[in-house]
Image 1 (cartoon, rainbow, N blue to C red):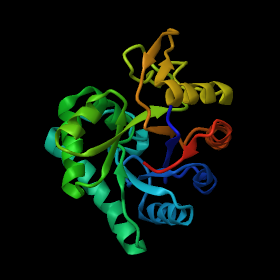
Image 2 (image 1 turned 120 degrees about the vertical axis):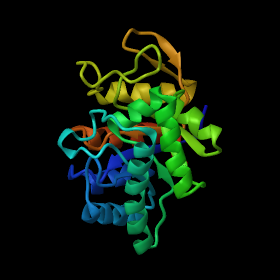
Image 3 (image 1 turned 135 degrees about the horizontal axis):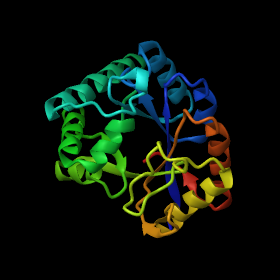
Image 4 (image 1 turned 45 degrees about the horizontal axis):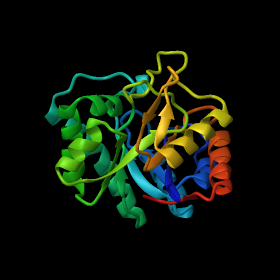
Length: 247
């Protein structure tokens, strides 16, 4: 069983709860102006991360704020590379100005999901990260192409699991279009998190236990219950002698 775990959260998306969430996490994935955010929001979120000793990560997504980056856009590998690279650069410039550093990258929404399923997309994302900084950590869905393609080119990775999403039998997340995609009960979320950390497994929507690697756990910052979940999870981890630490 792991003695520590990274807790990450998608922030800088204009949801208004970033300052509170920073108290309960170890890594912040900061929107870079694609699916959400702007330079002012990036700067404020980086300042909050610095103040709370939280690791700073870029959270690039499709440049589609109207749909919050949750609808795939048909881009070729070069265009995906450029999308990721350009958004990362914006956050890096903000961090440089504030004396901080971007240490990890986690794609957002539809780009994240497509990268998990499509090795060509995963390779384009990984190459953009490596070109920006070969020492960065790529966060990707456990057991997915996101992880294997990043490892193939020598990037460090963190296999990600989710505290507030349900799983399918193939290890993919239940699509948000389905009614049971989100976990809304804190007790259910805590049980899922502890199973993933302790035993490396998760129960699917069909009640099948599948194996999973959990090196970082995500809590979505845009969820209405995000702060309650984060607070409850931190308390449960402390009760089980599992420390929250950066990857």
